[in-house]
Image (cartoon, rainbow, N blue to C red; front, side, top):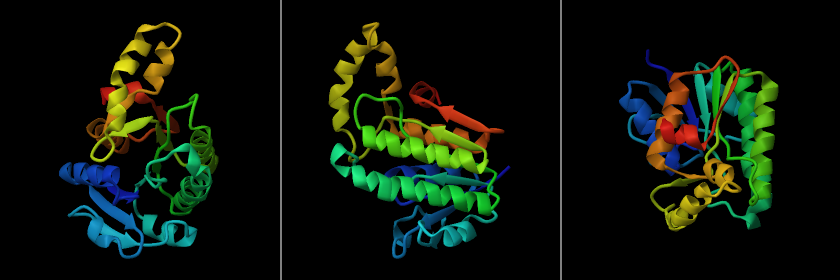
Length: 214
């Protein structure tokens, strides 16, 4: 059955890819975008311009959508952006969690990050706190936890693939290499599509191996 899906961060490269995939499968997609960004939403979506940090506005935009997908985050994260992770990533997730609960959304899909990790501690901490805020609402949720998504403009970590292969061969680093492995935009899009179409009764976590297998 067609679903009504609302996506925050719908103009990003992951948001546009997911929008197109859901539309191709017959679902209805609301692209929740900041003012002036309607033209960047994927063709076929229903763009809604709002302040995604404003809970009443966001709640109104989510009302009637069975599923919300939260994709907002700091672009090209690195350790120097610790303050942004709190101001943007965590604050937007908390707003989305509160709005989803108010709007009676039945499933919230959140792109988090693989954890634990030996680096990017501020980023992981912000995403972990966001997961906790979502769980606290009681809204059924899926946390999809990639480490890095390879795609247009996001390909440099592919240079690390030989090191990943070596790490997977060594018992001391095998689990970490699998948990923090790289995934492709196509794999993430399929994993998110499957998450949207198969809502859990409670909280579900999708790690890197499951993303790759989607």
